[in-house]
Length: 284
Image (cartoon, rainbow, N blue to C red; front, side, top):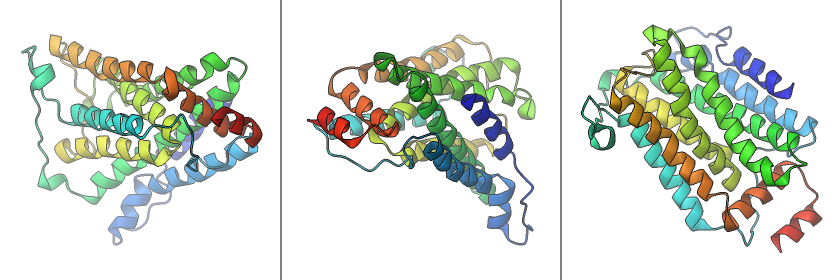
């Protein structure tokens, strides 16, 4: 029921345009009409929902020194997330198989450096990552009796929900059904990385930044109101889909072992508001 409630909240806050301000104030007009204010409102509400449910109040967990934490792992996660953004934003392929791996086009256009391009990328960066935060704590709580499964379920479950949330893009400025299904599958890969990055770092703003940049770079090339995904049925379409999902999946599987997994579990406990004494035992 909480997951359903979060989905309904996203539907309510995402397209909210009732707070429109006059175009004479372009920045404020764009921030309100594109739903940025509503996204911030949902983030604030999410913090209070987490507290009311008995979980950690702040999605921006304070850093706690742990023997399990490794800066090298955090740097690698940021590197993989950056590569994922680059691949998704600039991949440009045709019917030639090799282009799915090696052909990129950075086609940033001056005419798209607009306020709307910025705010329309900022809104999902805040809104959808807030929904991820809520989905993660709900799934962690729902499977708290199954400690060996709760972290993988929270990561992959939240990514699956993130992908499915894009089903509503069918028909958006001509986006086909096939393209929407490809988008649902493709963005799950990014969802894997952003979820594990949040659970490892405890910093929701990190995943918000990557989410924003992925959408913003797309806006700067095709415009904020263009079709979000293309799918022509070529072999390269399928190869790129596999790469978008498989590479992040391999990274997250790697994170499920050793000290990397230990830190994920520690941060999961902190999110669930496990008493400090129990956490100190885990840290020591």
